[in-house]
Length: 286
Image (cartoon, rainbow, N blue to C red; front, side, top):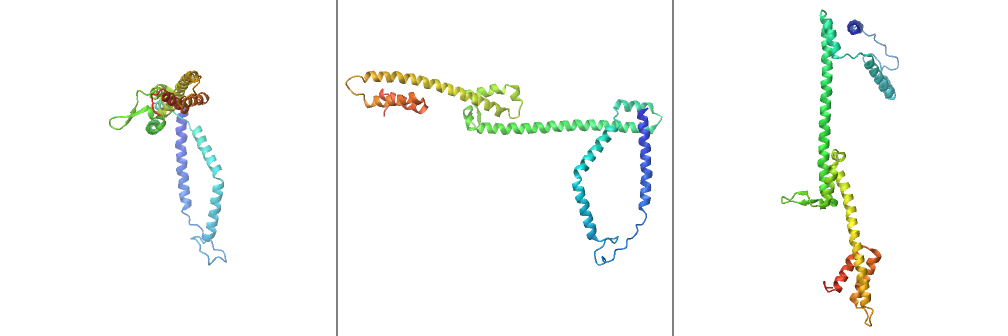
């Protein structure tokens, strides 16, 4: 059986390693030969073997430079060897190991080896699950922090001030009667936006863009209405001033304001034209 052969090979490998270790230990017990320091270096500081410390330092520096230069190749070679070892080492399932243990009940060494492999697989799976749980917890904590930060930025943004009101306790809360609030709520119902940690910031930006478009459309309609009213008033003024008497200064004032409004269509000129019209009608003072 292939699994049994692997166990046998692993056992023989361990025995060979033990023999090699004993040989190495016996060889290291031999006393090293003492080197005779070369002439002319008697006055230099020497190590226990009679080698000048200066020479050792220079040699060490040279080796360090070589290691630094070869570091990319060392890393590449190390990774290649690790991947090769991972590919060549057989990966057994728990079911295979249990079957191997049953078939070799008369050999306690094989049974113990199979049980160790099963325990190792269980530990790897448990560690993988724990890492996944920790990762999800970190991501959720980061998302929660992002949501809190985004909410603070949205509430403090002066562009979105109309979407909030201050309650009796002095806290900013959503203004349910605001068009901007309603537009943002609609975007928050979109799952593609709501699932993002910065969903509120995205929804508010989109809602604010829609809100400005709607507001500009309403303002344009109001300006168009004012222009039409100004044109009618201007025509009436010209009819009233067609007699012998010269037009009054009031008529001249709002006539000029209406002309400016007709040319520019700006809010400022519309405001000035309305004031002049109301003044001419005696509804407000000068």
